[in-house]
Image (tube, rainbow, N blue to C red; front, side, top):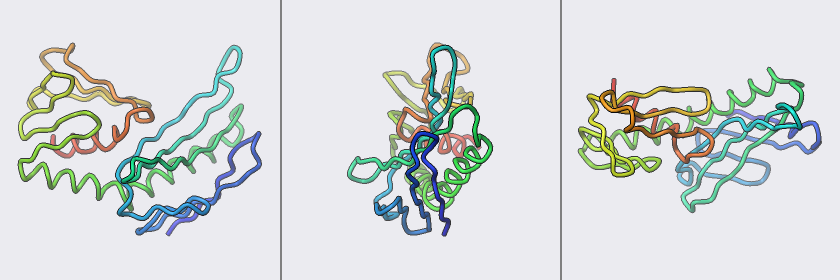
Length: 185
């Protein structure tokens, strides 16, 4: 079990209390049991000032079986406590993956191994190819490029056959990337 105290930011003195263990995620008084958790999206939203970036908001959205989301977020401005906040964000993400999302990826991979079609983040994964938006890419031609805030799926032969997914904006994009990495091994 890991417990986190989240300082919301420079302009908000309210603190949130997050507890993550193998059975549940608790944010203040909201409890999500392991069985209720179905997806995740997370990332950094940059806060723009008049002429430049003045801060960032770390955001984590955990999707439930009811299609509701619980939001974990905190901000920093002008680089104040940057290393501390970034480490907190990374530790929360790693803990969530350890307790919940590797299990979700394993369930998807088990369905895939039984030659069933699976759909993750708007992408259909078949035994020999993936498809999205009426486009198909065989696994032999499938390539990925990962960046800090997004990744791209594309065909080695036709770079115009591609799909870009943002970790923060697209539901379960990180789960899709992990599934495809496991399949391609």
